[in-house]
Length: 332
Image (cartoon, rainbow, N blue to C red):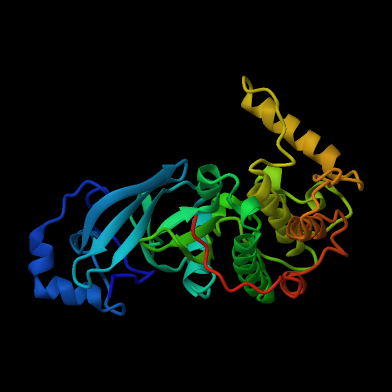
């Protein structure tokens, strides 16, 4: 068992993750082993915590920090360890993401096993997912879903099941997009599962909720209308844009704007998307000419998600009822 007690303090500063500075004495010491194997034992020092993990490789990095693949020396299990820099403006968001990841059903979302923190960083111990996110998959295989509609439905059904689960407990993901849909791959490259990732923007919605958050090109028109409250239906709109990208390999709301001034670019993007989405005749597919009934079914699904009025936008459960039966596994 890994040391995943959320209240575990950190009296020692410790080395940086990924530096490969792991003392063998930490692994050999029975007292330190038992200390971190027992989740009810307090305290567990940061040095002890780190002595039980071996750095394997860097998995990714971004504005938040880095994600490393780490192996737990006692169990031999691999974990993804997300290292997030502390920031007074975002620490509460990080703690919320950790708490949510620990309580949610891992069948649908990436499981958070625990975390540790020191004065400067959060170290989030997450389930290690083998595969690639949907964005990378689309880049690598841009025509795959268009040419294999039966596989399109396998992925969409899995996303919908994840959303139906979150929505059933009153949680809106708020940032559904290809980067936040992870495709689990086996050694032969077959997709064997789908999980939603990055719950950092997720919220518990209620009748008075009015947040403005998400990725602009995937945000529902609800965010731009003063008359709409924000609820779980915004995820359905974002799903519509996501599945559009799955078959078109681009976004219907991509806006070209100034690259010299990031703030101006953001302002232009918001204003142009607002103008586009508040037009009730918004139809990203234009005139449909395909006679393929499989493609027509996909296009109908996209349009059912992209209904500008959230009150008549279908729920994840209703959309699941319209998914055609699929039994195949996906392989690019």
